[in-house]
Amino acid sequence: MHKHYDMIIMLTERITITMPRDMVERIDELTKNRSRFIVDAVRRELLRQIREELRLSLRHPHAESAQVAELGMADWGAALPDDSGLLDPRGGRAVRWHAEEGWSSAEDLDPDDGT
Image 1 (cartoon, rainbow, N blue to C red):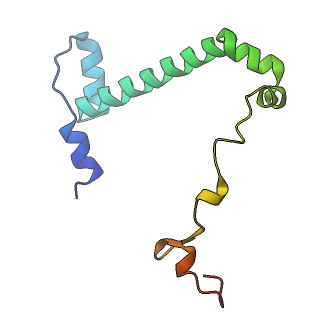
Image 2: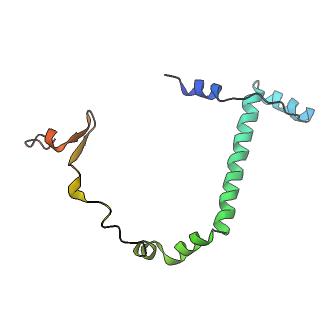
Image 3: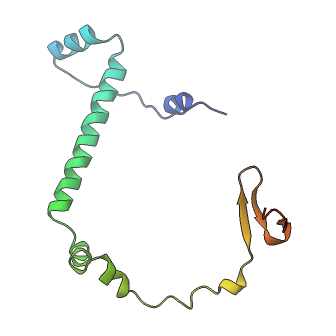
C-alpha cells in the first residue's frame, strides 16, 4: 500500500514561474526547499480565496437558499412532499453492527446475549 507521501509525489507537476530576484533570495534565506515553501504559500492563498468566496456567497446567497433561510428549517421540512410510501420497513431485514465482524443479519444474532 502506498503511503500518503507517495501519493503526493505521484500527483505533482513541474512548472516554471518567474519571480522577482529579491523575493527568491528572501525565500532562500528562510528555507532550503523553495518548492515546498511556494506550495505552502499557494495552498494558503487558495484557501484564503475559497474562504473569501464563501463570505461573498453568505452575503449574497442564492435565491433558493434565501427562501429556505426565511422559511426556517422546520417550515422547509414541513413543505417537503410526503415520502412515507418510499420505503417499506417490512421489506428489509434486521441487521446489527459488530466492530470485529461487521454487519450481521438477524439470523446470526445470539438471542441470549443480544449479539
